[in-house]
Length: 126
Image (cartoon, rainbow, N blue to C red):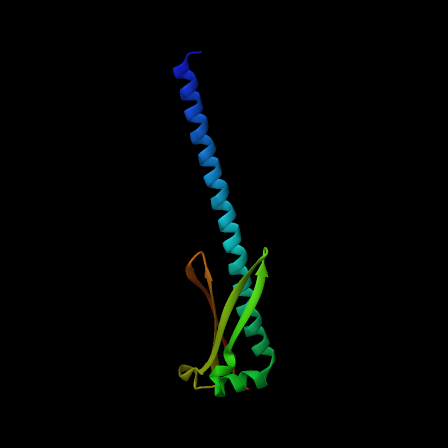
């Protein structure tokens, strides 16, 4: 083999290794972001379920919106993520004000960007 063939083979090998390494880093980042988003969704969903089962808390939330603000510190893969939860309950005038629209918004900072999950439900007034 000539020197030019060896250099060309090494160049092809380096490009392939860099491509594979980039792919692995991208997959790792996506899995990590998916885990954190899953936790955010679980926090919002669990709060909606709790309010569905606890009519007193639902009534209190409708009367005092500040009760729906909470922070959660969760450890995911050896690093802590701070989730900020805001839950609101408002009348639904189009349904004769017999129902409450409950909105659960969970935000967190990840990869230098603000992320959020918003879930919404409608419950009969207690």
